[in-house]
Amino acid sequence: MASRKDRIRALLKGIETGDPASVTVVNEAQYIQHNPETHEGSEGLAALFARLAKTSPKVNIVRAFEDGDYVFAHTEYDFGSPKVGFEVFRFDGEQTVEHWDNIQPRQGPNVSGRTMVDGPVEAVDPERTEANRQRVLAFTESVLIGREFDRLGEFVDAEDFVQHSPRIGDGLASLRAELEDPDTAPCYEHCHRVLAEGNFVLAVSEGTWRGAHCAFYDLYRLADGKLVEHWDTVENVPPRSEWKNDNGKF
Image (cartoon, rainbow, N blue to C red; front, side, top):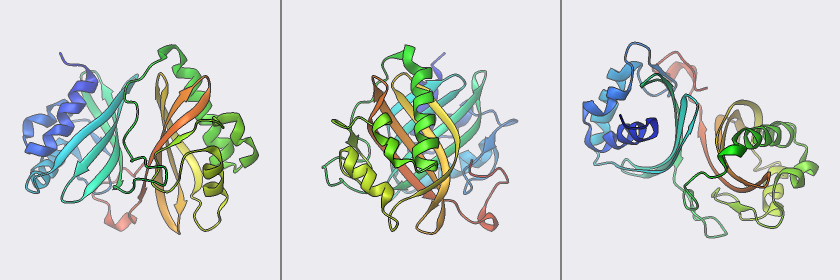
């Protein structure tokens, strides 16, 4: 049988064709959907894929990783307009039973000429998975949530920090300027989960930005215990009255 990562790749590519067979990796009886704009269950996914297929969509899975029962993927979409997203799936046995995502319009390149998706795609250093997970969790809690910006140098490589966020350029100074600017800084309030494979770590957080309730997905590449590369997506959380399921974004 194909690996979990490969089965998720096949599922996401099914968006291009609308083929209902692509959702067989989903356990219809147990599936929990956290995208507020998608109905519950695999029938909801099949309907969504059929609708999206009419727009001649394009799907590219840029990088995918596995962490225990979780698969997380960094993706490019074009549903009539280009978007970039992160997809997270939880497995129980051979099928996925829970899904989260965070998708935003594609922007950039940023001032350093980098796109939202370019850069390394393969995880290395599997023996450092747990240490890297804890490093990103500490960074998120102390710097992003706790706003202890004087500690940035403890976590971020001061010499070679590669930035893919469309709002920021390379380097520690640019990151600090973004975080300290009261007009542009996102407000991180809670970290919901940290997923990792080797030197790649994804942090899923909640907060506000520009007055809106937001989900922040931040993917980091680490080397020697330091954050050396960053990708992200930011998506507004719709009001409760607009949800198509009752599970919440997180």
